[in-house]
Image 1 (cartoon, helix red, strand yellow):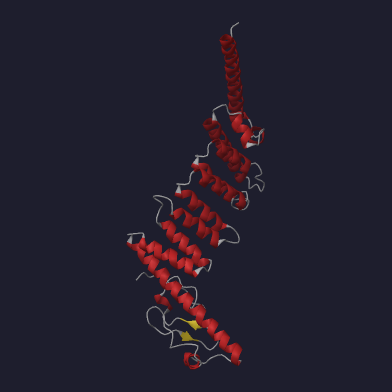
Image 2: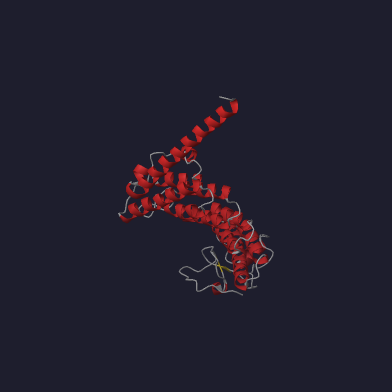
Length: 306
């Protein structure tokens, strides 16, 4: 037999073996899809090995594993289960087979992150899942949105990382402008005043939507109030440390050279120095979203946009 015929024969044998393997694999998967439990389906829990054995049927296998993940979660959620140990491996295999299957990241993260019985109680795994999705789909702003809310719903809430995730999403082409609003809100909750101010200013500058612009202005006003009051209360505390008493009014602090004049809010109304050293707004109803300067027991009304 000539060399070329030997090569042809060997290639034919390999092709037949591959086809036979494909048929056997598809039969096994079809049986698994209709009769097996998720525990039986997961006879291979390595994404790399499943991908190697897929023989080019990555998309088909991804759909099957995603279906099994949904069935597994749904079945256990209905009975209020506390153990979802196979959920993340199923999602990991699904997304390794098809890294572009966006639904697996979006819904999968919502299955994995919440505490049982609502979910698997593995927020770190949910973060890893979505970050993998972002690496493979960097221009999908919805994944950054999903990531931000995972950090937001963590206990305790990680406002700083939530703000960072939303801010990353704002850099994606055609990202929804509301991501800037969310990033700024998270930064504000995290106490990062300068970061929050920058983000609200960016939100105002990058949208033509009037309501969003008014919302940004209201938050910038609130940030100014919170920053003012933080500084004033620090000043009052320092005066008390130095003298042993609280200042009776702002004129005392002016006399000590600690203030240049009576401090006023963004509307020009003087702040109030209370007998216990707290600083209050004179008209708190004029400032939506403020955290500081509210009288005890004050209940804010609906947001006001100027």
